[in-house]
Image (cartoon, one colour):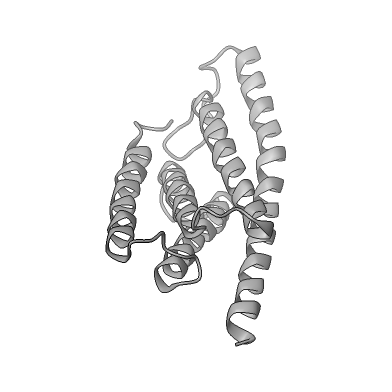
Length: 184
């Protein structure tokens, strides 16, 4: 079972630090940082890397039960932390412009973060050990079955949206590189 909300508080603290840096850049430049400038690119790249880590590392750990890469609960906390901080940085990268493919990618990002909060809520309803294994017999059989069904339904929605997000993000990155870098 998840112990506390450490990952949420840590993401909140990092969000405040990132916001402070963003506000300082706005203050010194007297404008919202453009996505195509050094600060905008940097925050977008770092946020996207965090989002890739969110998607890949936790999924790899989940599928390799034999590897001793740490507890599943720790990996889930890492997944939640990077799944909040990365999208926030990408949102700041957008320069508050939501046109075209970048706007669609931002919409997918917002939907996947909201879906993640829903999944976290469902996940916490199922009693688990520190390694993430379900504990049998602690809930009534009907309640456990319902929580498992909800988690399964949530996965069938969350994972395809995540895939659509990353496809659109990779197309966005490729187009940005092509049009802003290679054609110059």
